[in-house]
Image (cartoon, rainbow, N blue to C red; front, top):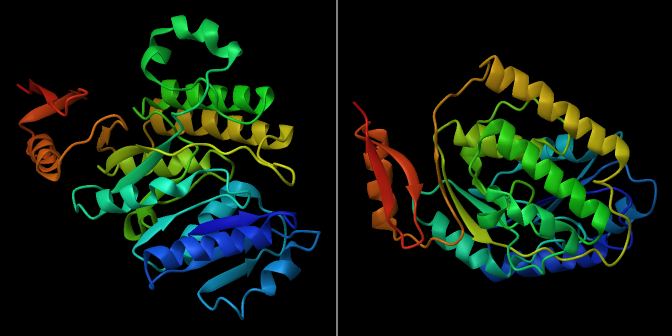
Length: 301
């Protein structure tokens, strides 16, 4: 489990206890990589007090504040276990479905598990958007714990989805990767766009990405940092800069096209294997997967 904290003295102790308990319930071969992002409160002091109690926890202290994008990259680079995933220090995502993610990753045909926020009450401000075709199938009704954060999240989602054409229902959530795959990514971004960059670049490497539902949990203590105006501006700059570089100019390292399987489809391993074999033999082009686990095909001349 990877995480990062900046001025989270109200949450960090509870997070560490909860993270270790979850990991120990899954396996005895685990690690918790926690980055203290140059906090100015007692976050570092509190985290360091747990190092002796939990020897499988590793604490990295940044010399200066680097924000979420760089922390994502630092945490990934320091991971050593076969599967990596992240969770926020305020425990903003419900990991009760973690066994489902691990079961899918037991299938060697699947490379990435992407969490999708689905079981949320629709917010009133989203009703006008329901008339837009994209939103009839994609759950973007309520994305966060207040109106402003939700608008930021929806805008971020729409920009990434429309500009980069990556067919996923969420980009900012818990994501499970095979470590060797995610560590093979050549990172270029340093904002909250780094999370979508991970998905884009693994997809362009030909990864099979399976979505599962992972609910959002509203923050109860401390202050969120991801929706500061400076963070939003940095993310938007990254989105358009790398859209121009990767999509318009085509200057990206990998140019394959992976496979995405929506959260509402439960394919058996044999079906996934058949789908992958058909695609990568060049015999068919995967155009869609329907809700009964069948995939449609187009012959390539």
